[in-house]
Image 1 (cartoon, rainbow, N blue to C red):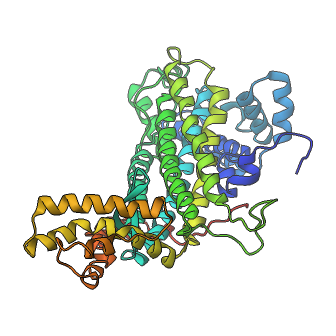
Image 2: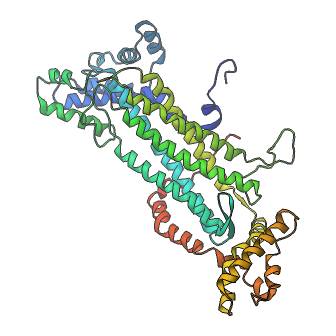
Image 3: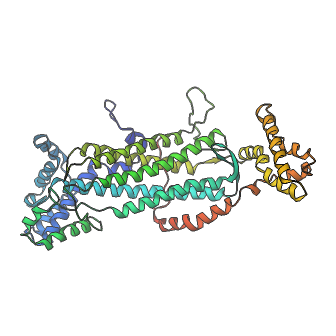
Length: 477
C-alpha cells in the first residue's frame, strides 16, 4: 500500500477484488486488443486484404500488454488509443499496418465501456440473487413469529418477522427485474466511425453497403453480444449510462431501506446484525454493539443515489455527434457507482447471513401493546353477548386512554384488560379476556403470504439462477 497518496476507500475498504478487476486497466486494455482482433477478423471475412497470419500474430500478443511502451508513447503523443495501437504494433510488426483499420478511438473506448458495464451488471446480479436466497431462508424461518408492526413508527396491527423480511425481498425482486432487463438490453456501439456514419468503412469496402451492414453484426457476435446499436454518433448514447446508474441507485435505495429497518430493530433489541467475538463497538463505551454494517450500507447507498445524477446530467449536455466533457465524469461516476453497490451487496449478504433474532424481546414488546390491538375483537365479543356497539366503543376509548396514562405517565404495565374486566358493560372475565391475547390471531395472512410469495415468486427465481448461488460475502470490517 502507498501511504503517501490518496487511495480510494471504495478499493481499499468496500469493493470486492472481482469488481475492482472489472474496472481495472488490465481489463480495459485487454478488451481493446480483443476488439482490434474482432475488427480485423470481420474485415478479413468481408474481403479486405487482411491475412490470417496477421490475425494470429494479434492473438498471440492479446494478453501480454507492453504497458511500458504504451506509457512512454503516450507521454509524447498525448493520445491513449494511438499509444496502445503503437505498442501493439511493436509486438506485432506484421499486423502493425492493419490495427484499428477504419476505426475511431470510440471503437475501443465505447465498446469496452459497454463490455465492462455488462460484466459488472452480471456480477451485481450474482450478488443480488444470493442476497435474495439468503433473505428468503430468513423469511421462511420466521414466517410465523408474531411481531409488533409499525406505521409512522407507532405501534400498529401485528405482522410476523418473516412477513417483514418479505417486504425487503419484494423490493429486491423489483431491482432484479430491472437488472435483468438492462443486461438483456445492452448493445455494443460497433464500428460507426467518427460521426457515426461509417464513412471510413464505405471507403474501405468500395461503397458496398451490404458488407458494411454485416461488420457490426460480426463484431457483436465475436464479442459475445446479440447486436450493436443501429444508429449512433461517434459514441453510444450516454443515455445508456443513465439507465445503468439508475438500476444501481434502485438497488442502493432498497438496501438503504433494509439497513434503516435493521438499525431501528437493533435499537429496539429485537433483531441485531452480526457482531464478531473481538469486534469493538465504541472506543469509549465498551458495552456497545453498534449496527456498523447497516450504517455503512446507508452511507454508501446515499452516495450511489446521488451519483446517478452524474450520467443524467452528462447525457443531457452532449453536443451533437460527440463532445469530450463526458470522459472524466464517466471514468469516475460509472466505476464508483458499481464499486459502491458491490460493497453494499456484500454487506447486505453478510448481515442477512448472521442476523440475530430475540423472540422473547419481540414477544414482550408485542404483548405490551396487544391489549390495544385486541380491543376490536373484545368489542365484537361483547356485542355478541348483548352489548351496545356504540356504547362499548366509547367505553373502550376511555379505558384505553386510562391504560395509556398508566404506561406513559405512571410507568406501570398496560392494565387495559383489567379495566375492561372490571366494567360490567362488557360482561367478560379477566380469564376470558386473556384468551384473546394469542398474537397469532392478529397477524392476518402474514404467514400464508410469505409461503405463497416464496413458492410463486422467489423460488422460481432461485431455481432459474441456481448456477450462481452459494457465495459468501467477504467484507472488510
